[in-house]
Each structure stands twice: as structure tokens, then as C-alpha cells.
Length: 350
Image (cartoon, rainbow, N blue to C red):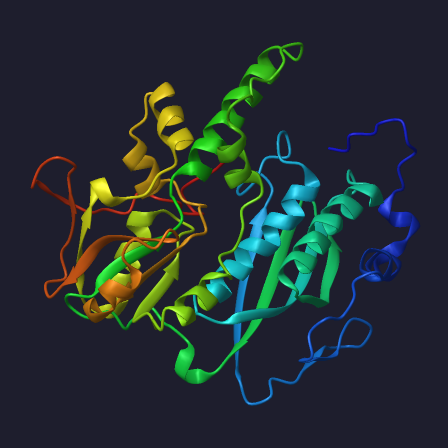
């Protein structure tokens, strides 16, 4: 859990709840003008200056969303922030503040929480957001991190899931499937370690997909790129549970169907080669893997010329009048019904 086993670790009970909160949060600066009252009072105060406040929350639970056998605590803190900021980015809003609540068992020393909050601090600095509050409590079942993210945006620029129209183009940022393949490598090497602790993990050559899993980034940069192109998406969602699942969400909310071209789904070469090494279909990893935290959105066909050949965006399909969703298989015109086989917290486990 902590790399330096030689140091004397501090039990949480030595600081107590309020002392622990102060210890972990006292060095977080305030950088947002909208943050009027931060940590230290009974509640924080945000002045939105006539913008709408956008709020999202996510919880990460040990044994369900992460395995501390191979996830560094600092990376965990960073990722916990990013997955929430991704939801704000998916609304085309700018993230501004977060609240962090942690439930932790007594097997964790203060130093372990310092590592988590070091990752949170890195994310706050990277995305220029303020930590404005939260809570800590004890847990009998391991570590749980809950983060609430807050963002601001003018009402006319907020993008929801329900605005797609027939013939709209389906667009995705970045590349997909890498986070899932990174998880497969981590799981494989962890299993080898459990069977033989003397075996060295084989991680060479997998840097890109390991980073996609352990230290993803929220696409908060996309808002500005779209503004520069003079494009306002008609609907948008982040790819957290798998591409297929997210397409079905847009379909359900917008009342349209989608045709997705398998050959258009963007994947990195390391993702493809690792999938082949593990006897997995790379496209299925992209469709159902999840945790890529890219943005999936629709645009008017009139914006095609603005976005085609742009390095950050790939057009992967289009909306249809019927509510049926199909994958058009690579190298053929075969229509395969699109089904959601991605992440479900009540079915999937690490």
C-alpha cells in the first residue's frame, strides 16, 4: 500500500476526525473566483455570477471499482477526481470545485490518506479546481471515496443527452479500449504475483494502456476546441461504461437510433496489439471495456466540413429515425444489433 515500509506509520486515531480533515486539506489553495467560502465553515459558498451550476457525483469502492493490490494510492486519488470532472466536461461545462468524502478502515494509516490526497491535489492543480469541503468517516469494509464535482456554464451552452436528431453525425474524441486492456494486464500480472511473489511483473511496452487505466484524463480541453471550430454538439456523454452502452444512452434519451461503423472506431496500436496478444477482439474492448473517459457526442451534418480530419475527433457513425442501434461490421455491410455489455456496478466486480 505504501512503498516505504521503514517509516513509522501514524494511526488515524492519533489525529481524530477533525484533525485528520485539517491535516489533509490545509495546503489546498483557492484558485477559482467563484469560490467565496471554502473549507473551514459548515458549508461552502459558490457565487455562480449568473451561470448555471452543474453538479455530478461518483463513488469508488474498494473491491468493486479498484484493487489496492496494484493501484497506487496517489493514482487512485487522481483518478477519483478525473472520473467526476469527466461528467462535468460531458455537459460542456467548466469544472470549478470538488468535495471529497472518504470512508476508511483502521488498517489505513494517516500516511495512506496523505498519498490519496496528494493525488487529489495533483488533479486540482492540473484542472485548476478548488477542494471546498467533504467528510471522513470510518469503514468496516475497506476504502470508499466519494467525490462531488461542480462546474459552471451559461445555460445555452450546456449539452444534454437528449438533443440528437436523425442524420446527426456521431463523433468521439481520442481513442478507445486502452483502459480496459490496461486493466487486463494489471489483473494478469497481479495473479502471477499472488501465485509467485518472487516473479517480476512484465509491464514493459504497456505504458500507454496502463496510464489509460491508472491515470486517465478528463477531456476538459474539448470544450475550447469545439468553440474554436464553431461547433455546439446536439447531445453528449462521456465514455465511462463502454462505447456501446453510451450510444444506447444517447439513443434512449434522444429518441433516435444509431449506426456505428466498426472500422471507424479509433484505437491505439498498443491497444490493438495487446488485445491480439490476449486473444481478445480489439473492437469489443472499445465497445464494452469502459473507463476511457473520452467524450461521445453528436453534431449537425452541416458541421461535417468543420470537424473532418481533425486529429482530436473521429466520426464513427450517424443517427437514424428508427430507434434501432446497429454495429456495421468491419469489411461488410452486416448489421449487428448493438447491446450494452459494459460496466454495471451491480453486476461487474474487479
